[in-house]
Length: 70
Image (cartoon, helix red, strand yellow):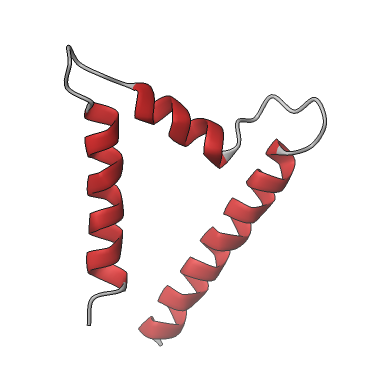
């Protein structure tokens, strides 16, 4: 029961992500695409420390650790 609920949640999240990305790619849309959001985050720095790049790397590491490591 709980496994099916978790899978349903992930499928719902992926469907929402795909819908938002599709809306962002329409002509004249003010919604940023995933690439634009990542570019904005990657530019963020505190002094000379690339905090955005470190944070994005940490997010991908966490994601891989939890979903791909077995």
